[in-house]
Length: 107
Length: 119
Image 1 (tube, chains in turn cyan, purple):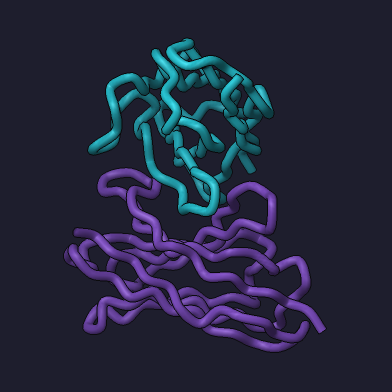
Image 2 (cartoon, chains in turn blue, red; image 1 turned 90 degrees about the vertical axis):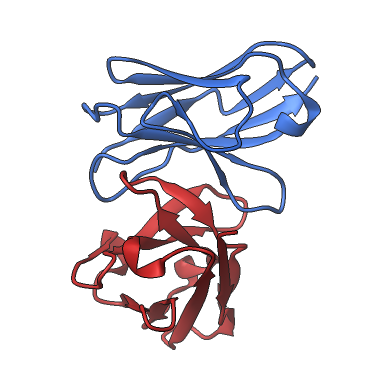
């Protein structure tokens, strides 16, 4: 199975701050990487697919990038509504594994 | 508007069975692969199973192979998960999710249904 190592596990940041979350794949997954946001008590929401493509309706302050087998999610100016848990997911091969999640809180 | 509405969860004893349903609307159901993803209490997300758009192919995570069966009724726009020989470690919220086309990620999710396996 492909392992997705996500870091950090938790993150505290201030409003308008730049936030970066990373995921390291255990093997080559190309651009088959997605990012999700899950707000407390809610279902996950797709943010990024294909490592860098913004899903419909997602604010442009979210962006994704790739360097080899390391993937990053960047929030350019943190807003209150961005608080939640973020997960990466590899979509290269079954089982479609997720990272352990990053809990993002306001400082 | 795409909607996925799960039903059928609840409390079940270990070793027993339960069947989840997911009613889909707002899109052409038989054009999309569909999946179940679970989340144990206070834990992360785990993909459970996927079924192709026409039901001809199914895929499962190892821990549920031989116990869970994913199926669909395209005439009713409904996805199912038959869960047999349930174990305490199957306790989780189960989400119905649509596979994004093209791609394997999940672009729409249901609200989730809780399954608790306990005596």
